[in-house]
Image (tube, rainbow, N blue to C red; front, side, top):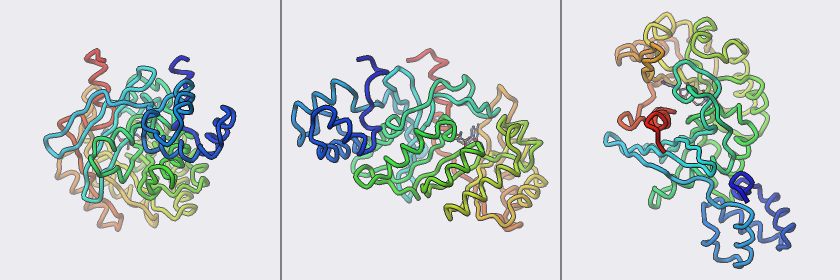
Length: 349
Ligand code: SAH
């Protein structure tokens, strides 16, 4: 058995486990027990209410732990933890654990790298290596839980490396598994899925019956500016993208969050704020402002606090709900793709 053939047992739905166990000559009712052990991150050796022979059968055809922590950095500023996770095939990904007053929030990756090519983003510099499996997304949550003595991850954001809508099936599988009552049982309302705007997938996602918060990385008040920053904007216009957001709001009853990274001299003027407010008028939405994490290689620079405040006031004056997103873990390459990029550049692991 090679790593790539090994079944990642954790990624199976209960009915699929039942099928697999009955093919192995086991009693199907065992599936319930195996499922909840796996979802809670137990190793085969810890599944003490299963027979040794069943545990051995599971271990000989697959793996229990698809993700391990390779390195952890803890921010001295705010206690934010940045994980470098290792995958069975030797690839690595990042996750960030933030402690907010409303509970521990984990940011996970959905792909190794990303192919969307946003000009300001470190995750996309080397393209997309591969999709993550649902089990590899769950494994990130379990690794984080193990570091949280007693407490558990309460909120999850799919905002690490990768484009969730470009790995649609595994992301949907992950959302169903992580919210399963017999598993980690994390409320879908505590999960955010962020997309750069793959319109057909957004329309499909609205029909899944998964009431997560949809975050849309907008970053511009019009197509002209958006096209300079994000290749996806050549494919779908802002009108089509905003219509897909309106459809999501209508189908799920949830508001959409717009991510807007303020970039000096590009999208941060008060005129941009006014234009943005015009586009979002009447929508049940919220705007998250964040000063860009400067990308010198691309000549894109963040803005000052005064610029953020001016942009925020210009939106508020036009009755658009907006906040400045807190930056956490600034001293530990907290932003997406930064730690992996640094580690790859240093030639490790
Ligand atoms: N592919 C998805 C999710 C991953 S990126 C998406 O595009 O939404 C998570 C968020 O970080 C996105 O809003 C992305 O646009 C933003 N981001 C990427 N690089 C950034 C940078 N240098 N500064 C600020 N935000 C950045």
